Amino acid sequence: MKRAIVVYDTIFGNTEKVAKALSSGMEEQGVQVDTVNVQNVEISRLKEYDLLAIGGPTHAFGISKNVKGFLKKLKSLEVGGMNAFAFETKINIRISGSAAKKIEGELRKLKMKIILPYSSAIVMGREGPLEEGTEERFKQIGDKIAKLI
Image 1 (spheres, rainbow, N blue to C red):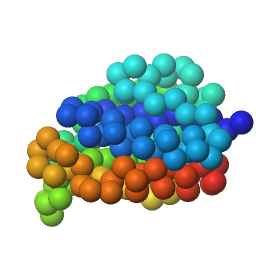
Image 2: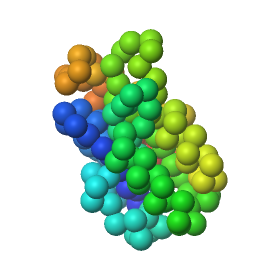
Image 3: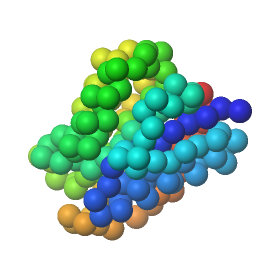
Image 4: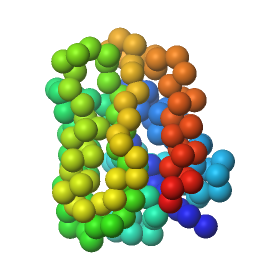
C-alpha cells in the first residue's frame, strides 16, 4: 500500500481544510495518508512515505515561518527522489506572491520529484472562507496524485 503525508501550516483553518481535502482524494484511491500540522511532524519518519505534500498560507509574499523551519529540517534528510507536491492558500490579488511556488523551489533543490505542479487555493478575504469549489478541486488533485505514485 502506498503511503503519503500531507504537512500543512494554518492560521484560520483554511489550509487545514485544503490539506484534508487533498488527503481525502488520495485515500479514496487506496493511499494511506497522514495529515499533520507542520509543528507536529516527526521528521525522522518522513522516509516511510511515498509522497510528501506540503502547504501553507502565503505570508509576506512567501513561505510562512513554520513551513520555512520544516523545509530547513528536511535538508538534514536524504529525500532526493521522493515524490513531492506543494500547495498554498492565498488571497486573490496580483501582488500576493506565492508560498507554493517557493516551497516547490525548495523541494526541487532537495532533488525531490515534483509529481504535479504546485496548486493554489484562494481565500476570500483575510480569514476566509475558501473560494467555492476549492475543497472538491483539491480532492480531485489528491485523486490524481494517488494515481501517479
